[in-house]
Length: 193
Ligand SMILES: [Zn+2]
Image (cartoon, rainbow, N blue to C red; front, side, top):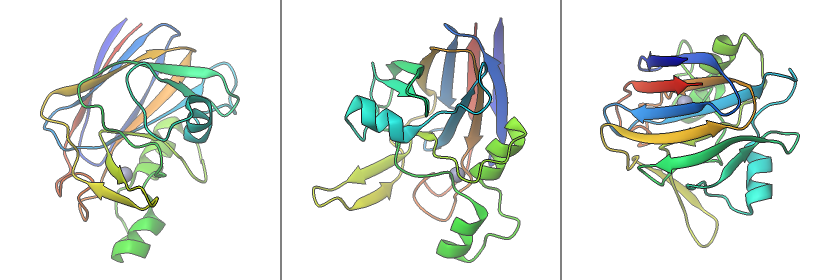
């Protein structure tokens, strides 16, 4: 079954994808981060883990050919194509408290934690997603800096599902930093399974 979803700025969606299915995430206008999270469909408490992904891949960057793992060390997705080659697997979802802490504007601020929880009808206390298109520069001394995404309009990442999964994606709502190049925009998703 083929589906196309448009994620409006600062909102989230969820959908089901079968094992072997393809999920394409497109940055429609360029410069926009998409927080990508998933839960295994066959076991309700199993979810995407960037920590395990870092552990298994032995790397803090995600690139074409890499697998994204669950907290139970099972493959969930494989990156099979990537127009950008610059993503983040270090940062948690933005949330009200983050906006309060950094910018004093958390009240009523849309955020990826709420977007993904609402889309999945869950209450994860913290979500550590794959931040597609997020451009985090990691210096030799371990310091990090978030720069504008390198993604151009229409750039895509293609993932193959390695298990049946409920996926949730949020078009990140941080306009205060360079994370989304100062302006929040839409994400398009193509699903085929
Ligand atoms: Zn966000």
